[in-house]
Length: 286
Image (cartoon, rainbow, N blue to C red; front, side, top):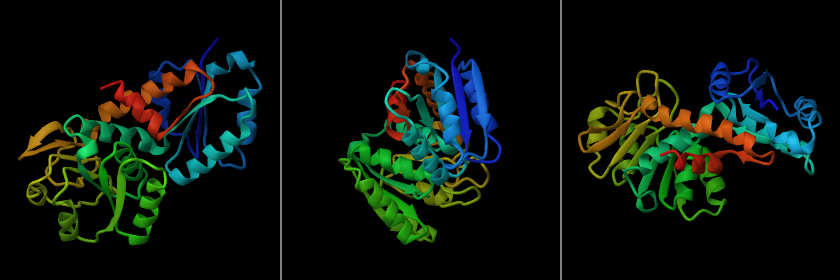
């Protein structure tokens, strides 16, 4: 029986990136739909779960994406509510690659640090990647500072993660300039920049001045990078006394997790692959 992946994208046009990865992950048939909302997704889910018997539903799966993480989460909730009893299929949640990218970044840092004993700072922490990175750092048992320009948004995001009951703790912080970032990051061992394209948080000189820092990862592939001097291709490259990764340096592991996640979907019909499960899958790949 053919493996069918149904791509549901909240953007008007379904992501070509996610389509290519699905093909490279050995999907037999790919059905792609854009403009997905909680209001129009139910008939698509019904079409997926009522066309094959319960014993064959593991051969159908859903990939849920889109550039707006909040919109994708609303669709995810509706899809899960539509399932009932054995009439369900596995799904993978990775809007704009945020989940697999966060997992790859934290796993890369974990190659060089005991994250349970480390202090981390995540710049752009209220964004989809930064938020999930903070979640995974808290899950690892460490101390993470979630940095945003908005004190209110940072506090809300940190509380949401802390309420998940992880061993680690997330502390919110608002920063509007380089001096404030340096003050927060000065005693950290891991610094992750996951801000919007075109925003540079620190210059190279400022970055290497952080004497306690061991690992720095910048996820911006568009110049200027968020952390000065980190090349997008950097992969465990030494920059002063700091081990650095750039966006493409992390991207290799991100792609492995993405493809492995798609393949994992077809092992049963009851999986939900999102932040924690995709991170665990990534642990098996490093």
